[in-house]
Every structure is written in C-alpha cells, then in structure tokens.
Length: 260
Image 1 (cartoon, rainbow, N blue to C red):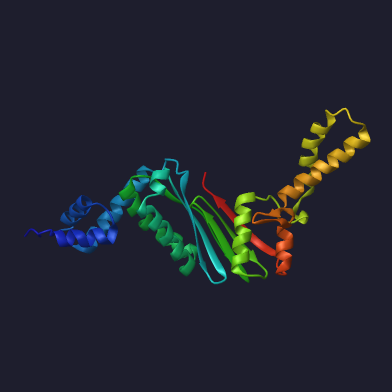
Image 2 (image 1 turned 90 degrees about the vertical axis):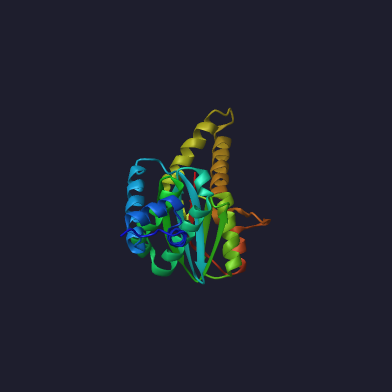
C-alpha cells in the first residue's frame, strides 16, 4: 500500500531540517512516509555530501561571541566562501553551535555538531568546519566583534563589562603583541635588536649616538607593541595601562581570533 506524501508532511520535514522541498519529498518517499526514517535518510545523505567536500579548503567563515554574566564563548565556523558565510542558515548554525557550547560545554557541542553541520552543508553546497572555540571566565568579562570576521574576548580582575568591552575593542584595532613588558622574552628582544642594528649600522653617526638611536628605536617599538603602554584608542591622552589603573583592574587574559 503506497503512502501519500502530503505537502503538510513535506513542510514538517523541511521545517525540521531546512533542506529543500525536493530532498524532503524524496526522503519521505524512500521512508514510506515515516518521519523519523526520513530524518535518518537525510542525515545519512548529508554526511555523504560532507565527506565528498572534505578535501576542500574552508578558509572563510564568521566569528561569534556569546556572553553569560562572567563567562564568554568564542566560536569560529569556517566556510569556503564569504557568500556562504553571509548565508542566513550559516549564521544561524554558528550561533546555534555557540549556544550549545556555552550552555552544555564545548565537548558536548562537538559531539552533536556533526549532524547539525552536515544538514547545512547539504543546503549550501560547501564544506563547513569548526574552527577555534574557547571559553573565557573571570570576575569581569567583555567582548568586541567586528563585522563577524574578527573578535576579542577580555577577562579583567576588576572594573565593568563596558571597560572590558573597550579594552577588547582596543586590542582588536591595535593588535598588541604583549600585555606588559614582563611578557617580552629575551628571544623577542634579540630579534628586534638584530633588525634595528642593521638599520642603525648604515648611519654615519658616531658609535655613541648610534647606540642611543638603537635604544630609542627598540624602546619605541616595544611600547607600540605592548598593550598597557599603547595610547587608548578612544582617548589618546591616556594609555591602556592608565585606563585600567583608574578602575584598579588588570588584564587577566584575552582571546583574539580573526578570519582571513
């Protein structure tokens, strides 16, 4: 006895999966109208589609950050093209995965992600893969996301979420290599000295002057690369270190991630 595949049944399956009407109808026909079997068929087929795309490069995508009180979750999801990265289903998928990771934990999300991602691969026709995922907690947490392509999450020892967000915005714009001077290793110093020594060596100044020029260049370079010494992006009259000191806060940790 043949089962009639009604438009209502197809719509119900499409609402549950988001794949095309034709794919839903074919799955329902193969499953003789059984909704659960049709779901399994679609998952199996989406997995096969994903496998075919596994050797492609997924270098585009988006970064999202979800916050919950003193906790923030950063997640990057990669696609092959910016066109898909702007797709509504892709954006929805990224936020869904981030929500699961924030509420249930990163490992739990990873275990569930395969089937969820494969259904969207079936819709958009591109490889999709998880990128950097990290959770940050602290007394004070804030974040800044720029255009879905770069994000910074900051944890402070004190202050306010708005201050943390301002620091995150500054880090996103200025990209410091170090937080304080104590983070600068001897290896970092030797590499910079080597670069500027070559530059100063070509000068016809006396050796004593060359030495002072070299010291000045090295000092300036590391100040420009050290977060607490950088002029604050929203008020260049003060450094980030002075801004933090006003709230008796220190930067505990930060995450910086970008696409491309």
